[in-house]
Amino acid sequence: MSKIRMNTEYRNKFYNRIKDVFEKEETQEQQAFLQARESFNHLQKSTFDLAKQVVERSYPKEDVATLRVFKKKYGDPCDVVAKDKCFYFAHNEDVDDEGESKETKSHFDFGLYGNHNGQEYGSEDTDHFAHAYFREELKAKDCNPDIIAQQSGKDNNPHKTKYVDMCNKALGKSGNSYRNDDDGIGMTKEFNAPFYADVIGTSYCRSRAIACTKDEYNIFLAWRSAKAKVVSTHQTWINSIMKQCDQLKIGLKAYRYLSEGIELAKELGIELDEAELVRTNSTGLTIYNPSNLASMIKGMKNKEQTREQKIYERMKYEKQATN
Image (cartoon, rainbow, N blue to C red; front, side, top):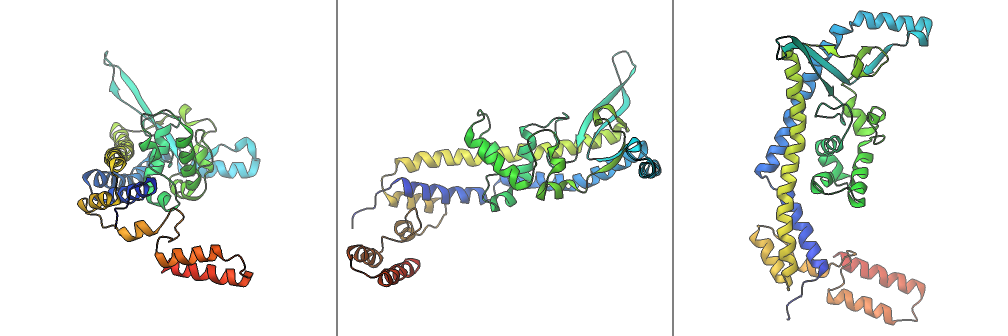
């Protein structure tokens, strides 16, 4: 028999199958990402517990309770208590060049889409973290949680925007502007729910820096760095996969025969069923098996079949195709 020639369909099959293996391999880059995510998980709760203690020093529980009583009694004029998940923490233990104490403060947001560089407003990194954190859940929903990492260094484009929006929608983010995840649903709401504390005052958190010690402040910085590390290790891991995939594309494009792709897969330790690659076309129908193909052609030639006969032949063909 003559060798089966490679075509675009076969190349795509090889590429997708081998890429899937690359993503599931236990590489150093993959393990670093998983470890970073696990470390963040441990720090998220313990750091928020500390943050809540700091917040309650400035806004004691009894004062919050009293103000809620006043609100119930007097209505909106006393509506000054709110729940928040982001805070400006500040300490005055550093000194400037003249030896005078100076305030050191920064923004810390415990939400899924909270920034991890100290800025109050969101950025692409906030989406990146959310997608990496819930990577497996998004993959299960046929989203591409790696899209931001894959498009790193490239200008925004419709392809990227499409998949970023799909991920954010699947996570339940309500919009693209700052703090819209406060109104999130689904996974976003579930993630955010445990990380709210009561604050007093109706203004934005920028105007109410909450006092903490330098040691406490450094703990908050370490937590925020752990969040950033989830993004950086995910980026490194996806970069390593993309480099392999780039070489894979070049090789597959050069191959002329299916046997070369099978040999490549075997060299990479991947078992592929050559017969299945040949039999299955892009629609998933098995048409290259002689018996199936003959039945289909016969059915096409018979113009005098009744509707019942056509249904029978079609059912017979589909049954053979799945065997």
